Length: 100
Image (cartoon, rainbow, N blue to C red; front, top):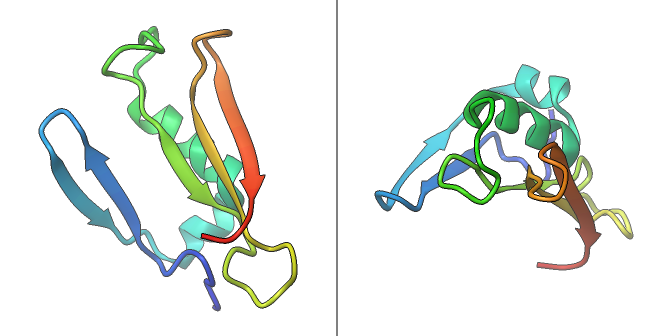
């Protein structure tokens, strides 16, 4: 499978202890959670505990590529950024595009 913007690697950065690690979840993961919003939802549900303060250290910030990022298609350079929203306490996500 051509992954274009995924490369089967997800970088995790913990700003509290300055540690990093790379997750290599496999093709099935990217098929299941295709695109920025799917990846954001997965990681928010996995890592943010219920009742966590949106402005506290338990919240995470997810920066995820779109499905076609890196593909030789005009307008394919999309990415999403998401976290637990301080406004609603729910899913907060924004999408943008452009060249990195």
